[in-house]
Image (cartoon, rainbow, N blue to C red; front, side):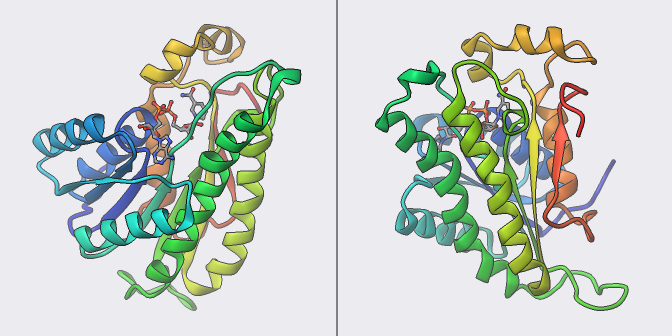
Length: 259
Ligand SMILES: NC(=O)c1ccc[n+]([C@@H]2O[C@H](COP(=O)([O-])OP(=O)(O)OC[C@H]3O[C@@H](n4cnc5c(N)ncnc54)[C@H](O)[C@@H]3O)[C@@H](O)[C@H]2O)c1
């Protein structure tokens, strides 16, 4: 697939590494301007430099956290200002420390809810008026034109229980519910909101967590996904080819879960 995204603007949370970086790369390779929003300053700067050098696209490093509403709003406003125009938001920032079921403490819940759920809420709420205010890039065949797109990264864990991550699974399921609430409100305003639920992906972080082999063995395709394969699905939902998908969750799981 080759799409000319020159002039397109996308903000990616947790864009300094892993799936977030792969999403940014998918857009940047098509000429889109990219804002990487991440709390990891050093990794973030290196990632932005590398992506700009490899793609020639405009790449902006925006340090910030998605957890608190005011900080998230400020980071998104900075991304918008740097890009000039914001077309897509990818809510990818996430944490997934494993914890035995009966040992999940207050701090574990707060971390998981803060980044994985409230972060999605904060950034989506901040992006909504910006995207809804965009001049449409293309006329709709009839009715309302699309003005913007938002994708949240959930997980197969929202659909299937695994040991030692109940807090993460519950929160990733909540992301799917939040996606529907935002889609209901924003589709009439021309903003398409969807979620992607990946299974195991061979990001550096996941490789160090020790669950990739276990997933791969149980997956009909027989391997973990390359982050670029998940990014391709996100590109479809968050890019110009999506004109009619709203409030959906796309499983990108190699058949591990079939809904
Ligand atoms: N890797 C997998 O197997 C897998 C499977 C299913 C879903 N996911 C989801 O995919 C997403 C990316 O996973 P990954 O493996 O690339 O993770 P990763 O740890 O490699 O990258 C996550 C990025 O998010 C950033 N981040 C963390 N907290 C943040 C905050 N408060 N504000 C801004 N940025 C923050 C980190 O600094 C990091 O750069 C996550 O939402 C994760 O839950 C991953």
